[in-house]
Length: 599
Image (cartoon, rainbow, N blue to C red; front, side, top):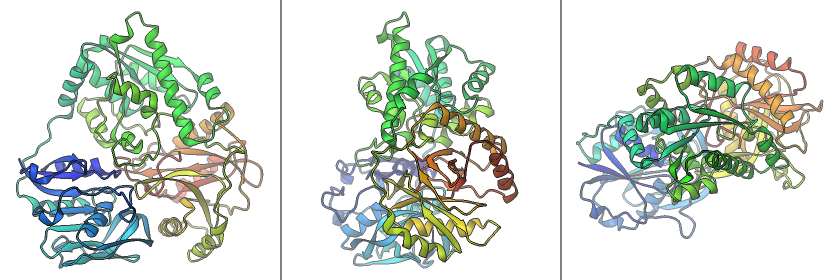
């Protein structure tokens, strides 16, 4: 069977590229660049070079290990792969001002082989700092954006194609058609048909369980729930036990709702562990996002060890099951060339050591969230459980931002004037906030400041203008990776305060989150709506919160939700009635450059 080789340069979307190719009927495999030699695999019909966090302008960057001059196969380079391909063919790549993160409009050459028959204008998804400055010999630009003369190129021989954008993500308009067009240069054979996810995974669990009993960490989200159902089908309900840990960082009534749903669906052997004091004590005084995630992940494993020790059976007769999905792994820096964006609780050092010893089963580790939901429907699980908004494993621990007098001084003062200049073109004003959030830009982790903006004169909300403003601010300011909006009030002062993760802040955040969920959880277009508590106060000395409603397909990319203005007004009126809260901002940042969660 003919197949496509996807070369993994550490990009966030490498696995997604392979998934898209298979969905189009052509088998694909992921290869590491250091090990890949196409001549050794005659069934390979084409090669796709993924994105990645590196720069081809720096020494020691990942590259291909075969002679591209001898290559006879079609090659498509995406983002970093686009830049690397151009360099290997004799072109020049440079760092510069053409940084683009998130949506961008490009103009395509309809006379090109890759885009013939497509619309001239299309909106695509970018995430890059470097760009192709000089094209290789015998190649020409076939697309450009307002900031980028070479958004795509192709060779005269129709063998080499480079795209600075990401056609594999759902945010790129008709991106699958571009991938399909490339596949048509590679092969006419489209015989790949994926079998049942459920049957394949159940058989794998049976093999990995090796006659042992299974202990599953059950958050109540769709990932752990689907993993639980698969384990029951694989080894039987009597060999599966579940632990739900109430960390004190859950949403309002979360644990009670989870158990009620599961019991009504017929699940059993579920134990609730009350660990609020343990988690809050360990997080006291901690402000670094990665440190918080490490603590939470370690505590989960310590609780599992304690539970196993309390079971009469020997520890060696148990294996841990986690609902880890692919985005958890790639954001944790799981592949050879990938960068760590944030360490998920199921990828802390304690877990990785258990994985190395063969003590962990992760039946969903190669799937995306949308695939997990499809799998849940295949297993006939209740839709109310399948479609619940995702909730991070660390819970409110990563939605309560902390601060300390040990934090470094903010580095944004030099860009304040530049921000004012950019905002003036949109009739907006704003300031850079003294807090920081995690982002992903060019497949690398960033930890930078958000900016808050507000209208100078307008009373109506124009989401399209705010989207363009957000893009301009983030692409031009090096100290900013996120933009939030103050819908109804101008902002005079935002002051950082020293604060950590504690029960008082968790209780207030739960109250705010409950009101938000009451107003919005029935909106089908909202994938997830985190509410963030900032370690900052407004001019009245009241704590500031941020709403983060996003639309997404699989959480690898996301865009902010354009809320109906009447609903937004109603929501803000409800939040304004809560005693003890100050300003509420609205996050208008896509992913990239902002991650869905702030930490």
